[in-house]
Length: 535
Image (cartoon, rainbow, N blue to C red):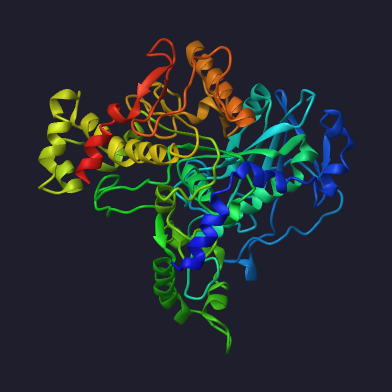
């Protein structure tokens, strides 16, 4: 990394981001054209800077689905930075846009090969507002190879929290994180999409009754890691003033054989040169079968591959490239450790039993010591087995779940919280409801189990008990108070203090018929000093 690039990162990230947001908040012509937004009355049709959009009513919210925020990244625009939208005439109906290409999965059962997918959805309360509302921009998870903003129906979050919620689709896998020698933006196209959506919010928030000076970027899993990337990206300066990272952090990484048998230790962040080398190797296999035109570049020739063929190699590019560009000059983990990130308040947390969601990959778990040895090696395994004795757990599977939850998820999030807390307020938490309707029975508070407490995933009202509904209301109140003010506290819920820099303390979030909401030392509960010493 050159000294010039490091100076750029330092200059861009050290100033308080709130001041930068103020400089970017001049209302667009489209926003000032909406007289209704100035009076606090939300219209059914809103004029964006590219054209008019129609809403539909869901509960106590208006939903504007399927708004394009960038041009379709197809043909010559594949593997390029997002480009401006072509303005339209007439009124676009509220209809979900295509999810970005991905193989069939539980969220997109039929999969998708539609590269015309750069759409976002805006949800606003139907109630009049006395002043512009805070805005929450949600980046979905899915391992950087699946998922869509379309899946996060936000009517209850927007209405109860009195905020505007924007959910975003962005390019995934080989479409979003491909790299090739000499290709500008290698390994970062999905991150650039997210920034394009945040810039769209800056230009259009006022049209929907939102405040472009008060934007929170939030996400879960790969979405949480994306938030970390935006926290450490100079090119996101001025685009948000608060951040929420759920089950995904700057320091996220995993050990050998820890999520799947045969898996190698790694992290989501790779040097751009490695991403480009991967792309060159992949391209060398594909180019001989293509009819490249004389003088055509390798990348331009690869852009001619049909999307339904490209989808077969979706998983070969799921790491984000850093170094050599202003999007991610440093690995987010190194940038955070060096204090090179936007100075904004942060919510950061995990679920109590994150790794339980991956237990099925190991089949019937009987030999717990063998799994530990495969993860940390024969020399370190006895230390782990002493720290997590099988006798302390109801089964080998429960012991393995605890080990991998702490090693992969909780302690990487804790260390990120420790580093960020040196500079900004960090509100740490742990979701601990053992019986979320999004988790299979017996898996406890597994990965993604908290999402039903904030959203209506897929537009479905999942069944919640009375105490779970109370917890959902309290979580929405915490999250949206933070979105509005940078402080999650308020009436009707226990106080939540920012964590210190040494031990990470926060709130455990569970229904009152379990443990209720109470303070927790996350560093101690998840043996984080042990894991820091082991590594």
